[in-house]
Length: 306
Image 1 (cartoon, rainbow, N blue to C red):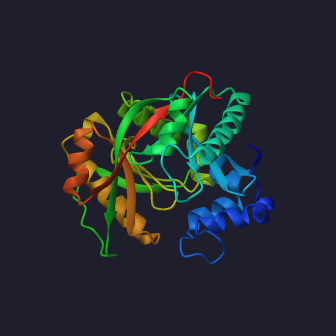
Image 2: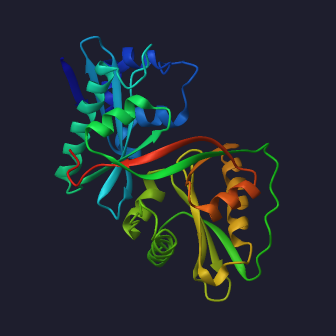
């Protein structure tokens, strides 16, 4: 089976036009969205790399190598977009071949940069993608819920937390970057995909990746006692609260203030992903109006990314 695989650049737009049409993503298609348009216009801005694969029948698949570190900076999340068709089950050999070709390309790209692991987020009903990662020796490390929140543009009333001030952090302060990294690391130390968000990556994420932080400071000392990470677009990554401020309603305040910030940026339908066994986070989200709409698993490769 002949498969052409190439790293996508903005100059390849015409090369993948037919394939994108099959997804309803051609110019003017009803499923166009700002995030995808921006990715195709400047693929290296939002991701480490974007790869495309096309077979003899011109069916197109794409892989997005995400910039965010996972597995203590030893891995990256790779998202596959496989061709739609009549058969999306696990026995679609042609689509599976495209998926394997993209994993080969993404794995080689990461290995050249000293990154040895690949993680992939797969919905529970995606038999084809489960087949591909299973054939490559991937294992499930984290079952998760997809959650969504729908606003109506009305501002939300966040609880008052005594002695705390807030800012939308726009970067440029080394001490703040270091405090964000330390608090996030402590909050997610037991997570299977524990991220190592270095101060340098935090600065880059704010400057170029469309990510923003709502930071809560202790009014007296100025230290960071809570934060939320959000974006790009309408994705809410999560929150972290210092132990000193547990039980103060700061978690609720961060979520509600973040929702208000999203709405001010034009996003009133938000998405998040939460580990199924993270009961405190799920309880918080349920209390604040988030609803589970799908399930999936994070699969992780053996030590060799390829």
